[in-house]
Structures are given as structure tokens and as C-alpha cells.
Length: 54
Image: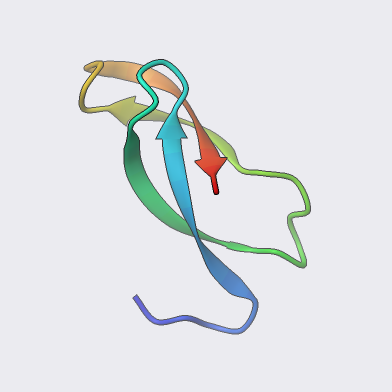
């Protein structure tokens, strides 16, 4: 994955089982707050909220 401009790599962590399942990019200048998405967790086997981790 190539780094473009202000886009930074962000880890997405499941709020239920605390496992890191996804990686995505976000523009720090455009989005000041942390990302929060509803994604499918492979461990929980259900759609849960995934938040950006450090």
C-alpha cells in the first residue's frame, strides 16, 4: 500500500474481543477524531464496532 500525501495507516480494533482485524488509511487533516466503523470480526463471527487503535 503506497503512502499518499497526508494519508496515514490506521489499525482497526474490535471493541468486543480487542483483536486487530483491519488496516485502513485516513487523512489526519480532514478527520481530526478517531475512526469508528461497523465491520465483521473474524474471531467474534459477528458485525461489531471497530475503533482506530494506536
